[in-house]
Image (cartoon, rainbow, N blue to C red; front, side, top):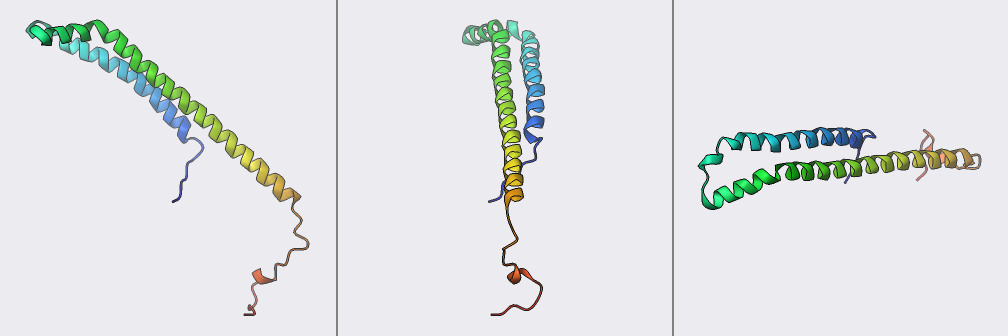
Length: 117
């Protein structure tokens, strides 16, 4: 299995998540506004459920937004870790390459000539 991810994937995901969190809070409030027209049609348990929803719209919206903000923070942390690991890996490889001594290496088997079997 091969896994490949470009360096900016997590950054882009974080930006999209921020946008979605803003949209989600607005959608909850839009649902409330749209449902207000139906408020007088509910009776009994339906009315009680609607009233609970109505009283909690701001809490629901805030909770959803806070959850997505936490997800965005996690994505940002993962992005930082990913970028740092890539930078560290490049540094280690560059350092190792610079310290390697290839002068005594037998490269005859890699030459373009006929191979002895």
